Length: 66
Image (cartoon, one colour):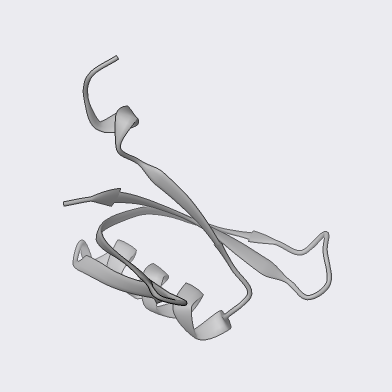
């Protein structure tokens, strides 16, 4: 399968500031640069989903690298 679906990544975070920055970039159509530990991902944020079924709350961020 070729196309965007091959490259989309889903990232999990417990950091509310990363989630907020991701939502900001998603709503404004900006390219986001997210850093998780030593890994850096740059791309368009497709979705930010809150998973409140666990403690602490986590967010699942779907990003398509550019």
